[in-house]
Image (cartoon, rainbow, N blue to C red; front, side, top):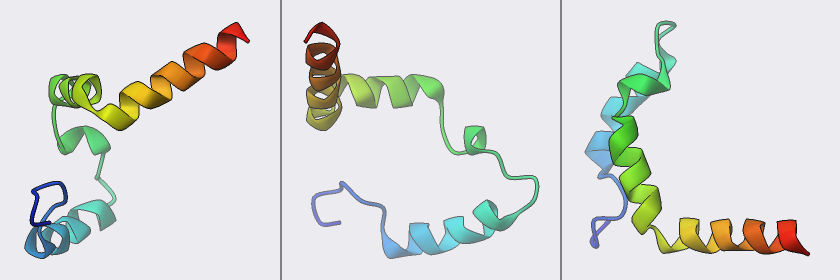
Amino acid sequence: MRKGLLPRWKELGSAVPRYLRRSYHPSQEGSMRRAVEYLAQSPAARTAAGAIGRAAIG
């Protein structure tokens, strides 16, 4: 949390009622553009993509 990598407790607590609504859909949480930008920069996502590529070759 201190590094800004996780949401704060208050943000998590306020998200729970949204998830429990029948009308909830994940698309309400954020934009696809931001998700793709995050994945392009995420070291873990890039490592996983590389592992998948290597597995497909071998």
